[in-house]
Image 1 (cartoon, rainbow, N blue to C red):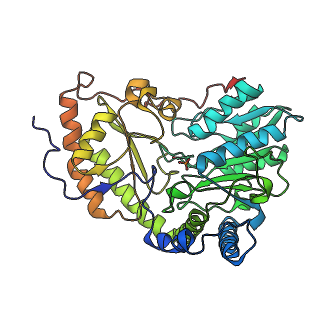
Image 2: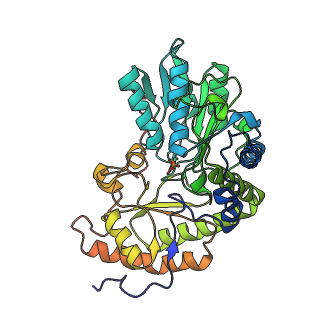
Image 3: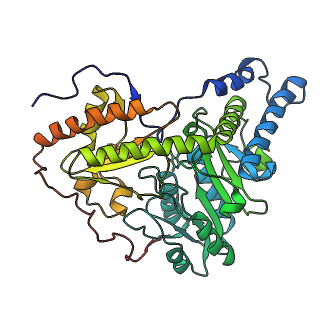
Length: 418
Ligand code: PLP
């Protein structure tokens, strides 16, 4: 069989918006003056600096409005990873006298999981990973059952970066609040798709990352509810109310606020448009390619996420062939290194490690059209068929192991690691 991806691509089709997005030209325009015109250090005392400080203040107010928060509750950071690190490590350090138990899930981003592991190893924290079901959903009651008198923090992501499942954050927050426990959510993938009102969500801390919603890389937000005990993890100057030292990245902060405003001014229309494209993509892939399953929740999923597992193929070979055909996609998280093998998210929803290797994540964004979806639906079936024809792992009718009707994690006991 001839390699199906050799014909020249119709166009490059970018379907990896969960990894990063292009900076919106309106965002670039808003940022430009702060590089070389109003470039003062916001902490300095002359007018040039005041311009930069005002820009940071205005950006803080914009972000606060969209989150339903007070400006003083918004901290600018260098990325989503830093926001997650500060939330977990800062809260755990501040709570040491009261307790040392953290509850999270096994499908969190490595920014949360690896921080929990370090807190366990270096500080003796106890971490409970409450399992998710085969769709990646965590049960709020299971979180409630994992609480002990030593629990100080619950961290559950708002939406998963690999499979797009949206978690019941408000329900988990209600349980946390009743028990006097801090609640953090990693909303990095939710921004630009889901409402971010912190009171409706009931969270004490929430992480965002600019480059997921058409702002530049290298800037993030941590919302910290007033009164939340948090020990700074980066010490130095008095920036960000003394909770995150370091000279502010003024252009990036302006870019983040501009991009967030643009995303939330048009949220409903864009979400409806993306859902239609996503559903066309999912129906097309499942209808045209046998022995394929949709990963993540069938309906409670991000508007832009279509993720699959194809029996009998390696995700990496699939990505290379798609790239040759002009399609940029991912086999899961852009942050997971290949030597790690199978994705921790896919194994947590019950896939075996071989099946999990055949994963593909297509994440749509602002510039995608129905023509892009149709192009992928034209080229993908041929590529999968070609790879399967060469695969010793595949025989027609192969099931994707672990995707049967048995829920994977739903009935499993939480795992606890100190
Ligand atoms: N959390 C989630 C859910 C993510 O998807 C990512 C990035 O992919 C991060 C955190 C880390 O964000 P950043 O790339 O800004 O460090």
